[in-house]
Image 1 (tube, rainbow, N blue to C red):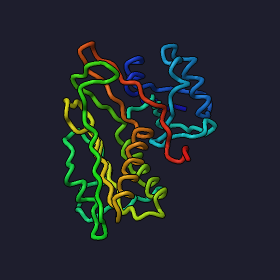
Image 2: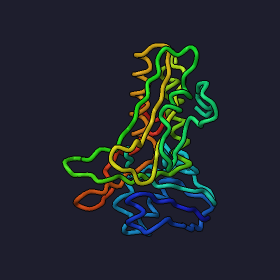
Image 3: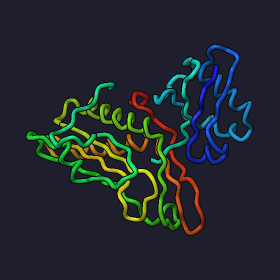
Length: 242
């Protein structure tokens, strides 16, 4: 059995790239893979208890899940930061969930979520600042597991729509930028429409929090004292929190 293991951010720096692992068994569990990786790769071992694992771009919540030949596994280090599409507004063809290396279109995203019934539209912009934990920051470099990140943006929006089902939230859209961003650049846009402003504010705040907790995006900080990956939080996948 052969399994491809994708590595990101600091894990990729440690190992120098992705891994291809072969096993004699026809199937092993996620827990067994975690153990085998520690046995085979001394440099990787210290990090394995702190990573989340995704298989074929979906988080695994139970390490007893079996793996099969050809599966693509991703080790998700702490991150910086509903199968149906959640509804979106009347703004045209712009995708509601996007990870891109091009500048984000803030007004277009607001128009995307706004409907004729919307009495409020809240747009949050995450902006690169010039400091972090007392250090001067010159720029940030964002990396993402793009196909999985876009799936997670959609899942987060679906989760928030379900959590706010008893309130008149109409639509949510989320765009995240990757690549090298300068001070003042917009890295994240969350747009939410609702009938009333408080519902829009609350849903937007929840959405931003969940993006930071679940979407596989990492930040490399470039500062006056060198470069390093910012410490993040262990992912809390959709469905794993109350």
